[in-house]
Length: 295
Image 1 (cartoon, rainbow, N blue to C red):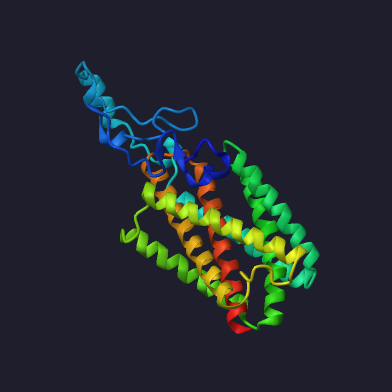
Image 2 (tube, rainbow, N blue to C red):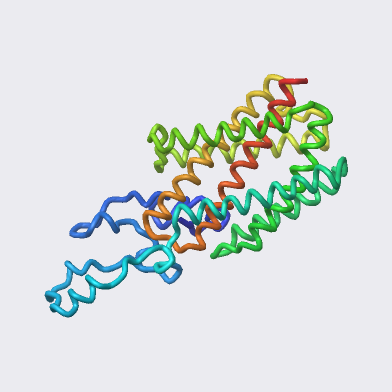
């Protein structure tokens, strides 16, 4: 689920020579069920249980009786991540974002300077979490509250200029999430190594283009390279939404693989963190698109 590059660790990009999803072939003579499992024998997570039928010596009648009478090992006993863990942690993280939005919208109003200060703090907390080897709920929830404050003030500004734009952006974000989840579950979208390479190349190019546009806007003309307005702005906003959907598909794969391969329970915080980042990305791009279309 993590890579040697801590910035991309939540996306599970590369692990050695393998890509996220751990969908590599089984070793010769090995069990394909355990192939590519990064949690099989690592200190950060529980090892996969050994199959008693693979033992060289047969079990004694007493051992068989003990196995038969022993209670089934559930998630609470194994300490492994479950879908319920991911849902609960994601709800907590998004709920914290919503709390920050309420504070930013009603208490801070048009204080854009405070909003960008909160955005900077959220960025720092997100980067610190990205470089940590283990998830920190305090950092993730701290990011969520500051990001929520930024979104609350920004949404208030957009709503004053384009009435109802934040509501439209929220509904659009929910639609993108539902559409990607359905497409992923139906296997219309398959997260492969090639898919990830192409998507990440586009994401890096998009971020660099927007950064250059920001520099030109700050030190040159007000519109920069025109990537935030007009027809070109619409194209880049749509591309940004598509990239947000791409990140969602990686998040879904991360959750699926974490549950399948017995990731430690605290990894559900990373899943919640990733889903929150992707949804915030999509919301911001939708806000920008709506503003351009309604101008």
